[in-house]
Image (cartoon, rainbow over the protein chains, first blue to last red):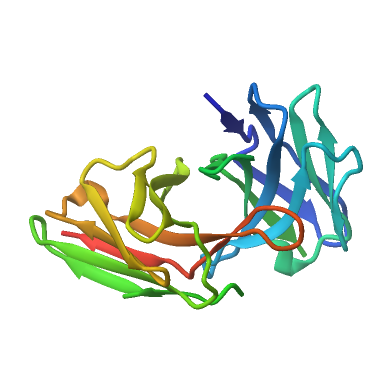
Length: 115
Length: 114
């Protein structure tokens, strides 16, 4: 069965610094999607970034980028120039590429931004 | 914003009572999902739907049923609520635009079962 593991329950970073959140996953599939979602105190789930497994190039969205290592089944999120608004729970997620399209979530990493 | 609303946003109920949560979407998405979020568990899939009257079970479906009689509405029912079903419930849709599948979430419903 597919699983997603986030080994860091909590992390802290100084404002304006860079932080990397770790995620590993287990799958026997070759085609899939990986996601990072952000959940601020408002509890809204916000998509941060998406990566297709068939793409070798790492996805980027402004200050957010990923390091996708397919062979190692690793999918880390790097946040550059951290801002107070980045404080949130971050979830790594995996999705099949089939008609069921179910997403499997990690348990999350709570990120604190220190002013 | 994928045009997803959930109602009610907050609900307090008593053990043994039936509860129905509604998810409504305005963009004609085929796939819809119900998740629950609990501390230490992340989000877990309860049920999902891949079309009108087409539904299937997720990871934690016991004690829940769903219905989808219209594309835009996906209902989650707790037939007889228990305290273990106190949780935050999220509805989601799958969007296949932009060349790939992405799930977008509603604002969540906070349910407290006393």
